[in-house]
Each structure stands twice: as C-alpha cells, then as structure tokens.
Amino acid sequence: MVKTTGMSDLNKSNIAESFRSLQQEIVDALTRSDGSVHFTSDDWERTLGGGGCTKTASGGRYIEKGGVAFSEVFGEVTPSMAKQLNIQANSFFATGVSIVIHSQNPCHPTIHMNVRYFETDQEECWFGGGIDLTPMYVDKNYAKAFHLELKKLCDSYRSEWYTSFKNWADDYFYLEHREETRGVGGIFFDHLKPKDGKEKHDFFSFCIALGRLFPSLYHNQISKPVNDASEHEKKWQALRRGRYVEYNLLFDRGTKFGIASNGRTESILLSMPPVANWEYMHNPEVGTEEWKTLQLLRKGIDWIS
Image (cartoon, rainbow, N blue to C red; front, side, top):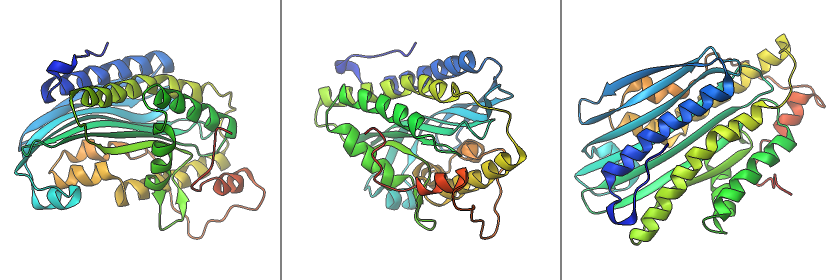
C-alpha cells in the first residue's frame, strides 16, 4: 500500500517515497487484473542527479505493451527547461509516476495516467497530472463509465474540479494538426500551487487517489466482451496508434520535459506503442465503425449526460 504522510511532514522526500510505493501498488493490481502480464523492473540513475525505476509490461492476456515508470530527479535548471516551464530558478526537484498501457485487442483502449510534483530552489512548488482514454473504437457507454468515475473522484475533493479538469484535458490531449482529440479525454491538471500546508496535502492526496483508481478504471474497460481481432481491426489499431505517436512526440509535456532535463530516453519513450502505421490520405468509408469513431474525436463532448 502507498505510504501516506501527515500535513506537518509533507516534503519532497516523502512525496517521492509515496509515489514509488504507488508505482508498485499499480503494478501489483494490473498483474492481478490481467492474469498473464509480466513486468520487468529496470532501476536507473540520472548522471546529472536522481534516477528512477521503469517497470515494463509484456505478454499479457489484455496488455500487449506498457509500463509504469517512477522517477525522482533533481539538478540544475537548464535554459531549455526554464523556457518550457516559464520559471526563474537555479535548481529543481521533480518526482512522479507515469503509466501507459496498450491493449492487445483493438476493441480495448490505450490508457495513460501521470501524477507529478515539481519544486524549485525559489520556494515554488506545484502538482500536476492527468488521465485519458484512447479507444480505437469509441464505445459511448464505456466512455461514460470512465468519466463518471473521474467525476466521482474529483467531486470528493472540489465540486468544480471535474468540469475544469475535463475541459483542460480536451484542450491538452488534442492534435492540432489533425483537428481531433487523442481519444475521449479524461482529466488534466497542472501547476496546482498550494497556498498552505493543508492545500498541499489535498493536492498530494488527490494525486495518490487518482493513481489508486487507475487499475480499476482499466479493468472496467477490458471487461468489455470482444471477439478475436480481424485483420481489418488490427490495421485500424495500427493507424490510430500512429496518431498516438504523433501526439506524444509533438505535444506531450512529459516527453518534452524529459528531453529538456536530459532524462533517460528509454523511459521517456516508454509510451510508444509496439506497432504503429501511417497511410497516406486514409479516410474510412462513411457509416463504418471507424468513421463513427472519428466523428467523436472532438472537444466539448459531454460523455456523462
């Protein structure tokens, strides 16, 4: 279980310790849920300060490829990092857990989650994170169930969070050059800067709660009965995974931060799918399931109503 800590002793060290425990809790839960998946653990060190542990997944009944990564890094703020984060500081500390799961069956989704904490030597700190669902074939009922669980979690902290974070996710998980969302969204939040110790503890608690919710959210998605994938469905899956690659390399803040902070390339690119494809001017026939999915990849959809 995740080790929690009181308001009086919440600092970067025990936040990192809690995130490391959260990583293992999620790995254990995914292993039980899948039944066949194997996780390989890789501890690593960052030359410029800190390190982490990357646990990669393969060979699952439902999980084709994925990983649950923990990092705790620190060091000098580089010019590129200062520009990206819009900060004026000499040194930084960052810790977090990041997860991406690519499912075997095209009718089961890709899912991503991240929670993180950042601190500078200028007595500035904040929390960030998010979760989003990327179905190859959008099922409105499963999208609704996903968002209902996120709303329930957000409402247990602040009533305005779900709407705010959901809209933030719509804007963040968006491929501008394609004019489409990455999937059915979720929630996203960044630069949650606590005003006092109580608020810092609340933000930290929310991050831990979101992490603990992740395994059940994924389990609910893979509980959907599916048939063996056809060649046509696998081809569509590879094309949609191509979009996932485009997003992560062009827009994802975690990828950009990892590169800017001289992070570990293998761990930064953990989110890449096992197979992806691009086809020139691919346009599904009107009325097909693929075409219907594309009509739902847009901002502002109220999945709950």
